[in-house]
Length: 114
Length: 112
Image (cartoon, rainbow over all chains, first blue to last red; front, side, top):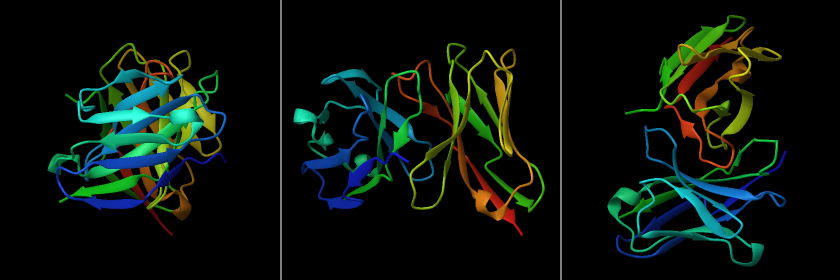
C-alpha cells in the first residue's frame, strides 16, 4: 500500500541544537501531520498542514517547532532549540483529504536529546 | 484528561478465541473512529473504522460495535490468530482534516 517514509529512523542530538525531521508523504496526498509519542504514552497530535499552511496545532506544538514543505519536497519538522523533553518518537502521516479518510503513517523517527 | 480511553492495557488469548478490546471517548463531536494496529518496528496502519451513523462495522474477523449514547466502542477479533498479535489503537477525530486523538493502546498477544 501507500507508504510514508521518514528519515532518519533514529537521531541523537545535543540539547539546544537544531534538528530537522524529514518525511516523504504519499505522493498525491494533500494533508500532512506530525504526531509525538513519548515512551509508554499515547501518540499525540502535534500539527496538520495543508496547502502550504498550518491548519491546526495542539498545545504540544511549542514555539520552537516549525513545519514546512518547500516546493512539494519533504515535509519537515524543525525543532530549534531542542530540549530534553523533546525526546520521543515522531510520526509523520498524510491523507488524501477526500472522502477517503484513511491516514497513513510512517515508521517514525526516534529523537533522543542528550 | 484523556479524551480516548482504552482497556485493557494488554490482553492474551489463545488461537481461535475472540479478543475484545474496549474504547470510550469524551468528546461528543467526534464523528470518525478508526482502529489502527501496529506491529513492532512498523508504522501504525488502519485496520477498520466506523462513523456514528452505524452501530456495527464488520471486516472479516474484525468487528466494531459502537454505542453512541454511552460513548463506547469495542473491537472484536474472532478466531484470533498468532499473526494478530500487535498493539491496537482506538482513535477519534472530528473530521479527516483535524488530527486523530489516540488512546494508549491495547497490546494483544495470541498464543497458538
